[in-house]
Image 1 (tube, one colour):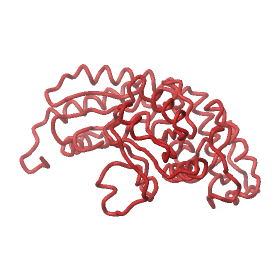
Image 2 (cartoon, helix red, strand yellow):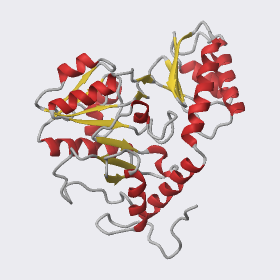
Image 3 (spheres, one colour):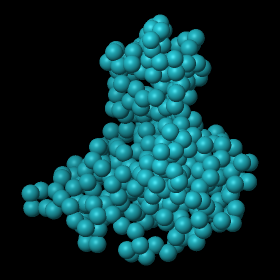
Image 4 (cartoon, helix red, strand yellow):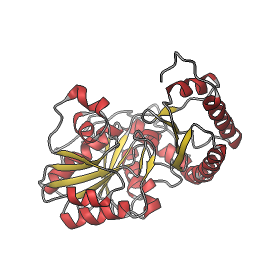
Length: 334
């Protein structure tokens, strides 16, 4: 397995200078999506989205960006402008002009929204923050066809769905999709801060110096990312996520609890939609030793580590079952 830089190695280096760990990481990343043979490295998912949006406007000479309702892409001004939830947006208005939102999984609405001023469409394969909604068959293919026909670029935000989470290395593989730009981050370096944009041939005018990142692609984080990717491959973490995710979804759907409206997901990215607010139930799960997130007011989002054991999944499922079966005190959030 690849080692971290030794005591004679630099741990940070400006991107203008060569470093072998960055070169090796870029080689691994460009192999993920055929045809996307360039990489921009930064420090987070939000930075990756910001870069992709800038590249799209620079490449096309257009301004408009079409995103999806319930989508989440980050908290900096450009990424926030693509994000739907007013809770994140309204404190910082006015945001970057030129952004619009259409319903997710509605190809007809997307087609109407994309026009001659559209630089890019940005979508998630599974909307994580927005309630764990999975792209329906044909929707992403339609987005690819619409953007190609109208001269816009297609950005797929894989910050949360990428790197094995959905049962494939990238979630777009479920749909045989080749977008123009792919955003990655989160688990790419095993917990160290890193972001990446994979860039396809339809993206033009990316002259050196037009966009940059002081710490992007530094040797330390690139070495960590290389080790993480080797573990993903050696232990087949995407395959583990596919198998464990199918088991978890089946078990959760078998619960048939009165409070559960729907269970949905892909791999180890699962949403349990309740008929009530989830906040008190998340607290009840925490009391049982299980940490989970909300995805909106009524969805419990389960994002277990890809290495989780089946017995631990059973613990999670039992904690959720008992938490939603427990009467909620009148003082709890409604």
